[in-house]
Figure 1 (cartoon, helix red, strand yellow):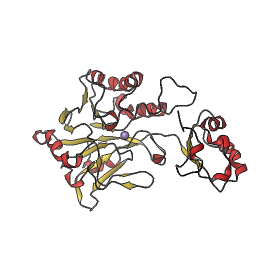
Figure 2 (cartoon, protein in one colour):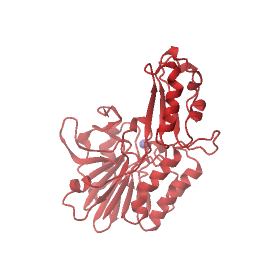
Figure 3 (cartoon, helix red, strand yellow):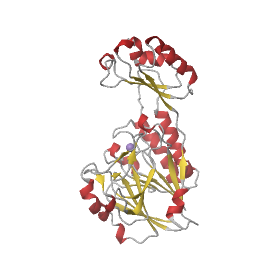
Length: 346
Ligand SMILES: [Mn+2]
């Protein structure tokens, strides 16, 4: 029996229906990884699919994004493989109802509830929509109101789209500790595992910050694509849990992460180490030597005497690099160049 677990697919990221300028859009990367992520289910290798939220990047997405998101889910559901979805924070706690209610194998946690999957073993999936406020004080009663304790099953999964104490994100490894929007480690119930979305960095929590063992491991599959430069070193992926022949869930957890590919994200920093006359040459050299599919962030950290002129305009920068790359301009707010630059994107 195999359960495919993914989250934070952020479909609609960098998507526009009527582009004013001709440039590569990262929207395609997100859809490509979405299809890669769902491949085990599309190929009939998974028995059920859990999406822990942020299917879409925004609460309002164009109809074409909704249709393209829905198509592979429908294909999976049509094969008799049920799909369970948590509405994430980017969807403001709801999904386009009409569409997602149309198939008996597509289930959304639109209120606190428990679904049962009967296969070679019986699986209970409990969850509720992403809560933006006061989850710390409401968590235990929300979990209780899913009714999970009244259900008979071999495996219990709590599916969430929230922040949990001890979760770490980003290059600087920021760890979430206290706050009304953070679930306390001690409140995690004794289920088989918690499948959690919202945190984009793949990780598994076993202990609280005070090093007491959690009642259940909390598994973050992470986002399926890198949504910002903070995630530039992260390997993205999904989990495919196989329950047969595994002595413990912990054992099965170890070998169940499937990595997905991501395009290289590269920082080019213009600072005092590059002489004012070399800036253009520095960028041109990288334009021809970086991998052709790079996502490049140009960071201006030089001081005023660099006289960067046109290099502060994203349009000019895009003309230097091949069309196969994505180019972003980053100017710190405190930089003397900040005021001179035009809006960085779109
Ligand atoms: Mn997200």
